[in-house]
Image (cartoon, rainbow, N blue to C red; front, side, top):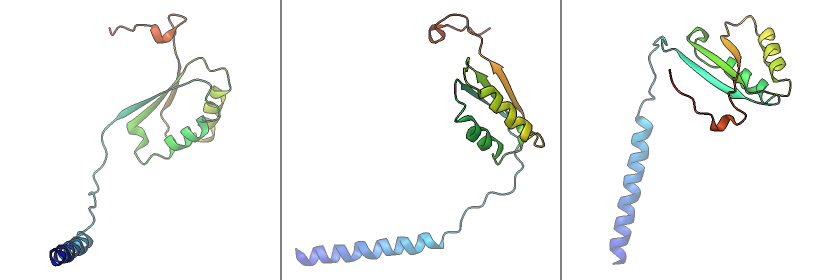
Length: 121
């Protein structure tokens, strides 16, 4: 019984070592240089997010994707802080970039927007 256990353990360790050596020989996959062509829109609602907006905007600016192929729509949900000013200042500072960013205001139809039922037209 002990001999069987030792033999199985040695075979198991040999098999694991064989797999490790085999995985080291596999070449890394490199995607060919294919030009991106997919366009998309990122919609980001915000309310009183002045402290988080600079980092968010910088992250969007640093995306590794052609900036003419995507747009960012920021939806202001009645912010009471200086979120809009932060966004506008960020756009002024980075105006040399082709940055497709729009700010729109949320249009509320009732006093309880979570209960509002929107109908597609």
